[in-house]
Image (cartoon, rainbow, N blue to C red; front, side, top):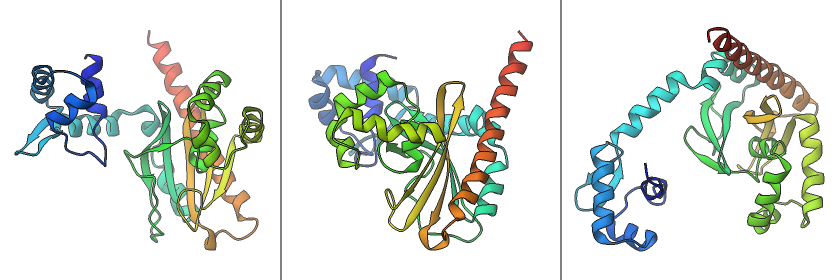
Length: 253
């Protein structure tokens, strides 16, 4: 698939669920003939579909692929019923997230029996790396070179998220999160909610994070450590399951 086709697909988001050919022509700087040729190819593949006279929306193949991911994603497979149990034991919403480029993507949300306030992170929603425990614990485990690149590009956004205004200060604030492999934040993403997150690692590489989101009113002093210990236990089980599956795959070669 060409870079331009990928850029067309990436242009669809919650703010732009339907795109018109004229909009894409202006954004990509290509001719009408080229855009219509690209749209026709994406439509034929099922990646886009025509929406009456309004333009194009994402197509049915996206839904089919999403189902395949739900059934075959190694991280989801390794999590099994552990997330449901964690939600029941902590009374919070459990989030399983992975790194997605320069964002954090929620791939599963498990809610407790007693509903709590709505949580911004939900399956399929990509969030920035700089706010909330779910994202920050991932950010802390990115390679230094990657952090330098992000700092040069997103310095204003990083500072707006409350990090120090210098790269050395930024790194110093991330260091204890990396050492602890965990992060706890209050009201950084959703008002009145606390996030308690643990990094999911594959050796030195960060895969994503496992989090529990709980109303601050239900998180009395001292309970954070108890909840975090449960998150650590499940995260360790997920990492072990991934490693065991990798070893089984190698033994079959």
